[in-house]
Image (cartoon, rainbow, N blue to C red; front, side, top):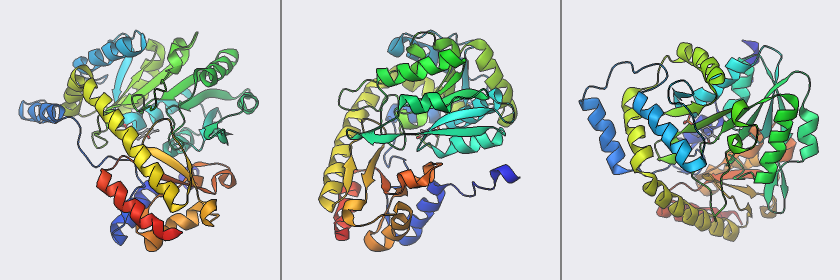
Length: 382
Ligand SMILES: *Cc1c(COP(=O)(O)O)cnc(C)c1O
């Protein structure tokens, strides 16, 4: 169909394939190369062996819905009824797609911040909706938006704003002030906020992740999305969840039940366990990731890149111009041959690719020796 033609193969699949074919170190796709908490893995295996292998309830295993509700309350002071306000999905990706499909009539508009996570554009297209990109620009070493541009992006057809913080691919964690600006626009124009918070526990340097739903007047209009993948280093489990007022959760559930019906049962049981018992592991992981970030940043700076220090996520943005390059897509294609490393060209996440042409994204969620070897190779560039 015409509206999906621009999407083809995702850049992550293309670059991961390139890494495998060329034997390059893959700092492209954001998946960790170590496992999640041991006890959680055992819990999943026990669930399989213990017979938790048939369709779980559509909204999710009750024990996971309950554990999500407890987690929201404990971390953010937000109350969600596990029976009706929480929905388990096949990763955050399905949650985002189902939310957009549930909210938008053809021709409705969805505001996204660019560079955006690539599935947003596809989800909006699937719904027959139109995306309006507000550009995140570098100011004082971090990516942020101009409130006037956000306001100007709203039209009578705007239905929702997709907000991702901590933000992939820039590593920005929106401040309370930035979120207040988003919240004001949502309240003034009666918009729904769809928040992608998959990196909620991966903010660094004492920076606080503030869920948009905690701001005044926002819980009632926010579809809050999280996932076990990034929090517990199990990106292959594809276990996510939606928290929202019952009418919104119900609308998302109506779509979700005909996309996948339910999410896999064993991972749900293990995730319920982990949300209750493994948050100390998550904190240790966050500390370790922060050190990996610093390790990669130091190496990239030595190699000659301009580095934008991220406050969260798995990723660091680099400016390739100090090395004499101008086009990130071109460099990303040649990087395996030039240095034996794969990275992601940030420009593919823009509706205005010129604005991101000189950025390359590197992932630091890798073992220290992998980061060190990548840095050694990248020094060949200068
Ligand atoms: C990884 C990622 C996702 C996908 O999460 P799944 O749970 O694997 O579907 C969604 N949004 C962002 C910003 C991500 O980085």
